[in-house]
Length: 308
Length: 109
Image (cartoon, rainbow over all chains, first blue to last red):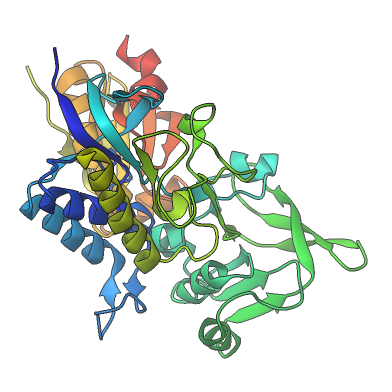
């Protein structure tokens, strides 16, 4: 009879690691499944994080995650570099299975699986993924030295990616379906001042052309519907994220975009003993600091639940 | 018998990869690439378990950029399987061990 843990944390990043720190310090002996290849979450694919409070000169995303991980470890959290691939959260004892086939049981679960990149949804976008189509500038920008590439999107991520890519590309064209950016003013101003960045407003990508790699994009003007083609050797998609809630359908209440629904301002889901935090829940803010804050809240909610 | 992964360079690519009698998985990676580092240990495990069926070698794209360009690498990690000097399978992006084993199924049987 395998022993039943007090709390299992599914997912890492600032939400998961902060939950682990708090749960460990509350003597709950938490176990955290940080992901076999995704440990650290979205921040592992960023470079400088300038807006996380407490770091006057900014901090590198992977370094911030490494520090949080070490902190969780210091207080005794058990870190497993594996994925949870199956979960039954409906009973009093939650049963979860990891990628290596092991089963773990727990009285409470904290869900912190975060989000994945949103795709445009084109067949050729998927087909040419890794062959000129990318969702991660810091990962792949290196391979586009001296080229003319496109970034699709209008928010902070798109502007940040476009700006980062100018370190390698000769020209970066930011394609946005509206006529103004959603991005924060400071990011937008930096992009506008960058001579390597060109803006294509009121434009959407309707196809990605090329046999074995990206050669051109088919575009449509969102105002008059006219179509055109333009040569590009790379396409970076930065149109937002979708919550990683695929394993939760049918047992945890999700909104119509797949985000977990929590009770009021708590991290409580519809299932007793199951709590959710970070980008899995948050459509609105999606910052490292808000994720960390919600991870803390989830651990405190779990602690209160276990004490009753 | 366990077989660790080994490093391959421009100088050794022909002999180690193109002329190999067994399938070879070339892991295109770089030091600064997080997902590359994350999948590294998984490839070591697969190499130890299946080294007699598929040879796993690592090519650093910073050091050997000409080969990376030759094979059209635009995203890392990229894991290309070579059989008789030709690329027969392309795996792009870090994946968990079970998913990689599934992708490599036909070589591991």
